[in-house]
Image (tube, rainbow, N blue to C red; front, side, top):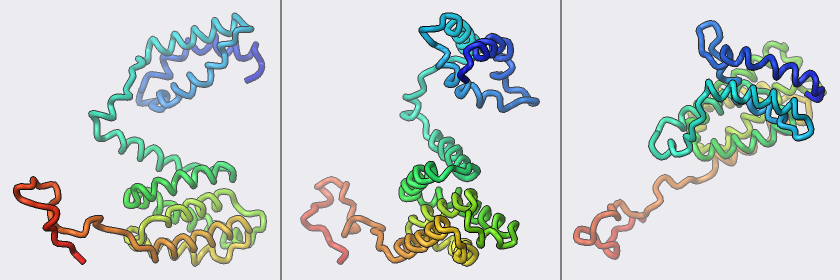
Length: 242
């Protein structure tokens, strides 16, 4: 917001509704999700060239921080084991329901590739079935006309991009979803939009690479327990599995 008078007027109204925003009631349970975005959005109000703007901004910050305790939880990762599940759920939900612009798609796609290489089973289970279902619904609802559209569809292109990155997973995890993966290729291989066609072609390339690569299941060439004490086990007498 560039209009300082309008910004100041809104800031004067915010302290009166802050309590309703941060409270979690049955009638309005999503208010707490807007607290952090609200805090970030009003920080530009701290402008050394406008004392009135600073004053109303600090009033809003004071009203929020009196109701919401600010606690440093960075050390919680050392004691809690369930935090990654919450993060995983929020990230997968964001990727599954969001439609990104073409520039942002490349960044998000790289992010998905890293996740699927680190945790292929969990990421595929969370994203692949619903992504393929979205593609199927988009194509069916357009009665296949979307495949003949030269301008393309940003939603379809994004879900195809997701599939392209998800097939980087190891072959063992991909085989579970072979039917839905092949259904996507059968539906979209005739698409004429250039960017979408390149995306589905690269997905086919990455799928073939994943299916033909060899992955080590066990990194040692021995079935001996190398962590035992030297009283029970001597490494120079190890029996190799070759």
